[in-house]
Every structure is written in structure tokens, then in C-alpha cells.
Image (cartoon, rainbow, N blue to C red; front, side, top):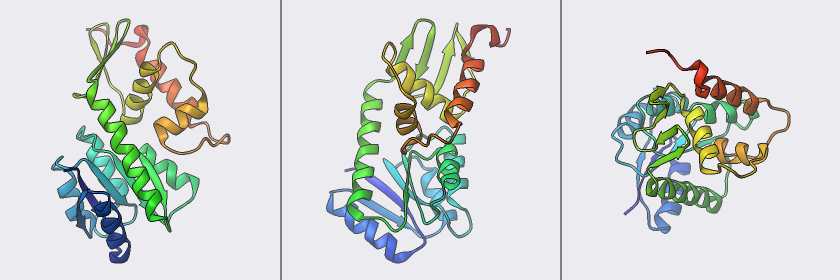
Length: 211
């Protein structure tokens, strides 16, 4: 059975999440603070995490950052009353896979969970990607070019993975924004340009470290 961890300090919201996901056949564990939530999340034993942005003891950003720093790639749906674009960007940059603003419809929350689980399932079926001399190990979360490892941040890794999966196809900025960052394209942001620039500098052969 699919196991989901819900980290949420508001009991009413937590009960709503647990009831809705339970009705879809998921097994849901609820933790009411960030400290205990982080301990559970670091176990790596869950298929997905719903994560409140503002929590007692340890906040949501610190939790998702700790997961990604330890190469734990459990999908994270961040849920928050903070709806500003900057807040959403911060959550996704830290390693969140999607961002849902409170108040939310239970059906939409469950649908987003199902989408993230399907995405994870597809990714797990293919464990390695290769384009010319560039390789991605999706299990070990390692990127290699010319037999040398690239030091990529989690968002850079996801961006490179998406580009490699769609190699030879036209990829628009909207597609990148929605697939890598998980929300609709904002024409006023330069986040794509910044990450593409960083990724190119790391991937280009001439920028690889000398042995």
C-alpha cells in the first residue's frame, strides 16, 4: 500500500488531508510538528510527503532542504497559506515538487498527490538516462559527463533530467516551468534563465574539473 506522511500542525487541515487520501486507498501517517516530521521524513520509508510550510520547531523549508541535502528524493507536496510568488518559488527551489495554497479543495490536493506518485512511478521504471557522453543515474542521483561527476543542485538535476528525457524535442519555457518547478509559467520571472545558465556552466566539457 502507498504510504504518505502528512506533516501539518493544524488538526482540522490534517484530518481533512488524512480523510481524503484515505478515501483514495492511501495509508497516511500524521505528524503535528516539524521536529517529529523531519525525523519521520528522513527515514525514507514514505512514497510521498504533504508538508506544511509553517510548522513548530522546524519549518517546512528546512525539512525539504534537509531531505534533498541527504539525496532523499521522496516527492513533497508543500501546502501553505503563504501564497506570494516568492514563497512558492522558495518552496520549490528548496526541493518541493509541487505547492498548494490554503484554503484548498480536498479533491485538488488528492489529484496533485496522484500526479506526483505517477511521476515518481515513471521515473523509477527508468533508472538511467544517457545522451551522448552525458549520463544520469536516477537512483543514485548522480550526473556524469566524460566519466566525471557533475556537482548539481536538486533543481539543476531535475532540469537536466527533464531536458534529457525530452532530447530531440522542442521544449518551451512553459513546459520547463510547469514540469520542473511544478506551477504555471510566470513571464515576469527569470528563474529559468538563471538555472539554465548555471547548468550549462556545469555541464560544458571545458568547465569540468581537471583530474
